[in-house]
Picture 1 (tube, rainbow, N blue to C red):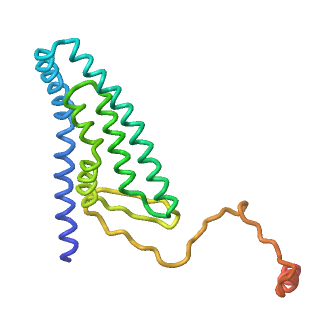
Picture 2: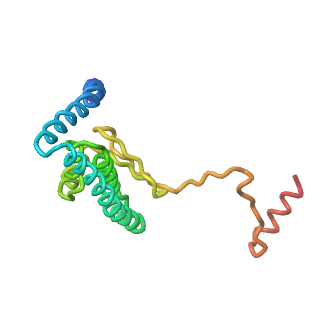
Picture 3: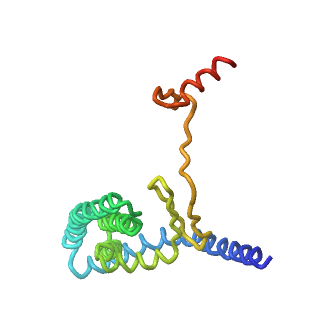
Length: 193
């Protein structure tokens, strides 16, 4: 009974957190462009309009170069983890962060550029991974694939027992092994029925 009550309380807390998170999305979409405009005006008044535009273009070019360089590096780390039969959870999250950093650098604006440059720093990504890994629930399955979810959900179940391969009738055909001692007995039982 106590575990049922705890689960219900946790579910209600999760609903509050989810509704709060969804309520912040419109605010973020409004706050970022307004902040970028304010920063554009402040920087433009200090260094001039042409220098401001040149700086925005330069950060976009630098972002695309960094995205290519660090993105390929992250991809090779993911492939090496997969080749070693390990779940590349950290590498995949860091790859997503690199992709987000490139997107932020390609987006015109100084605030997004600053956030993008921060995400290209490996120590910042490690700190973000440390923060996210405490909240992630990663489940591995026998086929090498995995699924992930965030929150304090149920613990992963470790499958014990045989691996089941599900085939349709047209995908499997039984052929008698002539060297088997049971091959003739099996054939005789088929002819009787």
